[in-house]
Length: 145
Image 1 (cartoon, helix red, strand yellow):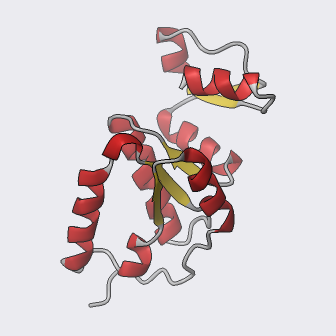
Image 2 (tube, rainbow, N blue to C red; image 1 turned 45 degrees about the vertical axis):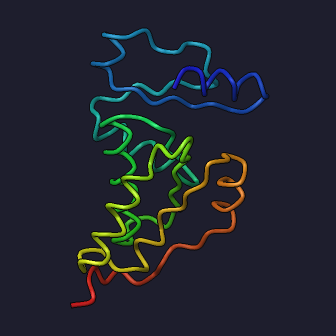
């Protein structure tokens, strides 16, 4: 996250970081951001990031990345927010996850309209263009059954 923040700052972008107090005590918080918001919990962190975001972009990552990505998708699916979600699929990093999502959809646990909410591109610039043009479904019906 630090490398992405630094690249954005070097490019002249505004960068707002959101970090729980407990993690800020364990790690060195990035102090050169445009703004650093320290919150009480991970739940508050995700809610704050969702409020600040226009869209969600996930780079390759671990459990935290997947947790935040799926929470953003779920909130959009349920109509809690109307913000697009994209995966930067560098070197096929997310290929197996996308296959899993296709299977979940084929099994009827996710509607195709909701599966289509997951925008994927290898090129981050192409993904950002798609996110700018994306519309999210207004139908919050979860399954077709």
